[in-house]
Length: 145
Image (cartoon, rainbow, N blue to C red; front, side):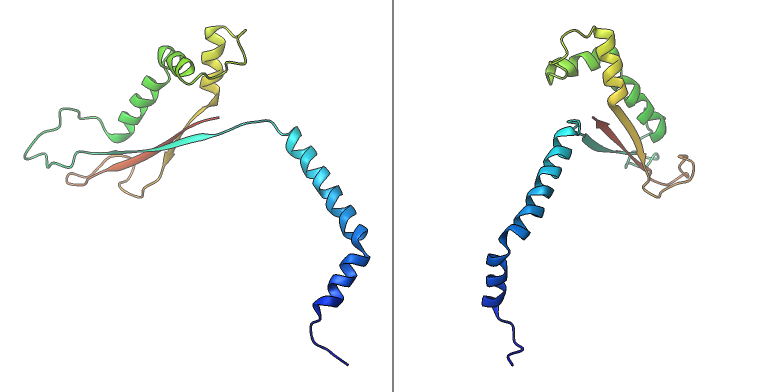
């Protein structure tokens, strides 16, 4: 009795039972193709942005922008979401060219619904208010579907 591994035996079994292997493989392939074709084509682009407080001590140079990082992020978000900026981005990157029948208002609303802003935790100060000599960094992610 040979208890070793014999590759010829397994090749013989595969050759003899070829249809037993081929039928389930083709069924899985057809099913996977049907699922892939039925899913919507949605792509996601995300950028992570880091906003740091000034690195120069206030003793040397006082900040001309006293806003905290969270307030600055809110300002950035408001500027990015203006109607003019969204229309310029749609034109520049040729977004929704397949939907020529959309009005500019509908286009802006559609873009706003697909843009996400997410605050990212960096584990620094409490409640977004820095201590007297603490350097604060805050990050957020901007995404578009």
